[in-house]
Amino acid sequence: TFFEATCTAPVNIAVVKYWGKRDTTLILPTNSSLSVTLSQDQLHSKTTIRASADFEAQGGDRLWLNGIEESIQSNKRLVACLRETRAQRKAMEQADPALPKIHSWAVHICSENNFPTAAGLASSASGYACLVYTLAKLYQLPLNASDLSMVARQGSGSACRSLFGGFVAWEMGTRDDGLDSRAVQIAPETHWPDLQALICVVSDAKKGTSSTEGMQHTVKTSPLLQHRIKEVVPQRMKDMIAAIHAKDFPRFAELTMQDSNQFHAVCLDTYPPIFYMNDISRAIIRIITEYNRTGIKAAYTYDAGPNAVIYAPKENMPEIYALLNHYFPGAVFDDQLGLRNDPRAVA
Ligand code: DP6
Image 1 (cartoon, helix red, strand yellow):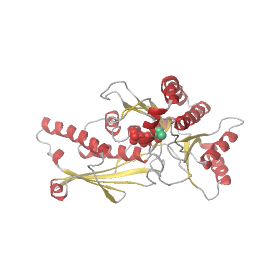
Image 2 (tube, helix red, strand yellow; image 1 turned 180 degrees about the horizontal axis):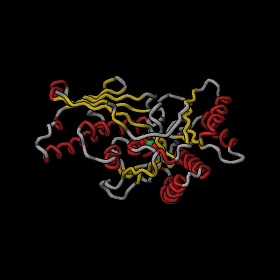
Image 3 (cartoon, rainbow, N blue to C red; image 1 turned 90 degrees about the vertical axis):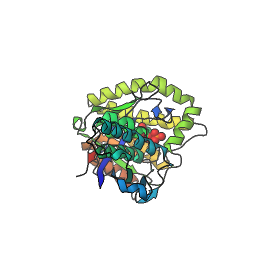
Image 4 (tube, protein in one colour; image 1 turned 90 degrees about the horizontal axis):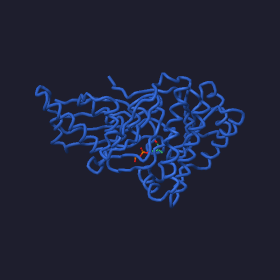
């Protein structure tokens, strides 16, 4: 006998960036952040987990990522997510003796992304959100998305925001145990259907400095990060939430571009410096800036890699797509339309 669940989870792209941890084990951030969840139609992670009493004899817990087996025990973050969800299941089984005692069964986990891993396309976010969501389905945990976000957070910080669709804040919290560091939905995906995202794949090569490693160098060496944490992000979170509620695109765009710029400035202020953008990334910034000269019609943002994400009202998208293709023929531009959605179970 076995129990099995399969789910998919979306990618999210931050408009107020998370960069820096105050606790690297629980993954507690040094500032709150805010993101937009993208459609699952083109980018998602998909995970199948099976629990069986027979797996103990077959090497215990095992993991396959994009078809290749990886060691589970060396992956502390995955082990933490598994431990947390198993503990919750065990508590349920103790409260209800009729429930099958599957918390002690070994699991086989198969996870895949339909896009390049570690290219700065938020694969850890959708990957860990999907892992935790699938575990919760497998174990039938009665937890809401905010509860699950606290488990996903321990897989990868940005993953906590992929438990919701639409516009999502990760409230940094102040507690040492992390019980107030969780994701909350600011507005659902139906709130602003006119807002769309375009992803420009400048390079799908694996990034040089991982986010995990890079952000702690920044925490240790960048005085600018301290200014960002204390003086900039608290007000920017409020302004961003107000812009989203008001569907004020020029304000949303201005804040998004300013926050991307400051994140990359903080990387440059790290010693030795970290560079995530390349010449093409910077050229795209100049093109969008010029395009916005007579009024803000598009916003760019970059994570820990050279790929651009452009947010714009739907009506401007064909023009922006044509503009970027004109300057970079042959480069791959993935048209990412529509903003959705919560993770879902696959029937
Ligand atoms: C630049 O969530 O990948 O994309 O918590 O160490 O796994 P870990 O880091 P990760 O960092 C994401 C950083 C970012 C900004 C953001 O998504 O907010």
